[in-house]
Image 1 (cartoon, rainbow, N blue to C red):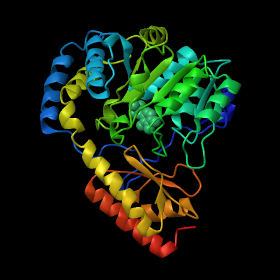
Image 2: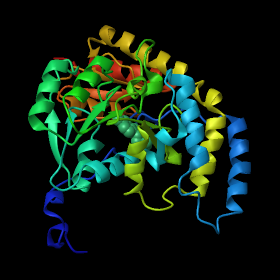
Image 3: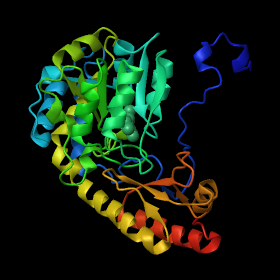
Length: 368
Ligand SMILES: *Cc1c(COP(=O)(O)O)cnc(C)c1O
């Protein structure tokens, strides 16, 4: 095998590492924020039927514009967010990662800049690099919240073409106030992407940026079926924005990017929205249980509106990560000194996590 260094790789990709949540064997895998609950039996039955029907037409290309799926997604957003979203405002792709890539292909690219408030979703800079878009780290306070005044000032100074606001933020769980989104939007001529992958897990009173769409043609809200819907394997992400944004994305999307099987499976899943989202409250309960248990172990956490908790503070987070893994619990070392991230799952998983964590703390001292 040759080496990467010998290949005529684009210079900005040299020395980079690929996205890497370790897919390690562990009894309890609490590191990628998936929903652990099995899909409802009625959905599984309907999926068999729907995919069977779709398979009959696999000799044909799929609906390039995914019109029926986008109508279903628009109806879901309208029903759940208090915003009115039309099908023409919705665009879907293979995971919200592909949606984000298409946004950067259309609005970023060579000579252009994206800015995101780090620590945040590691794929934002990675997709930026992949599309030749320069990346600038935006600032957060020490408690991981975004200072609206400082953020707007930094955006005015950097003049990015694309701004990412992840809310609730990954890996910290921090929700961003809508006023902050408005201030950032007003400070830029670029597009503002609010990545709401975890929106369904938000605590009561944390509104969606979907309500900000009217009158803001450069605002984009991205969502996914990978987290709350429990369908990470489906690969279905989507966005809502002004219709002109959707027109722009049609310029860069590959034709027939969304297979007819994906479209059929996603529509079937959306028909079972209520059953799928029935587990969200149970997951939120476990998240809050983790948060409540941490002080008793001499640990702390960041307020979370997502299905995970950033917890610490460890003298050596890497050692704590390994000690948990040795006890069968895989959490995420997100590279933040002192902190680890755990996905809230079933009650059994939470119990296993808290039990292992108590043992680790007892053994290592663990805290600063
Ligand atoms: C998990 C996650 C996504 C989801 O990506 P998919 O490609 O839809 O699976 C997007 N944004 C953030 C912040 C995430 O954590």
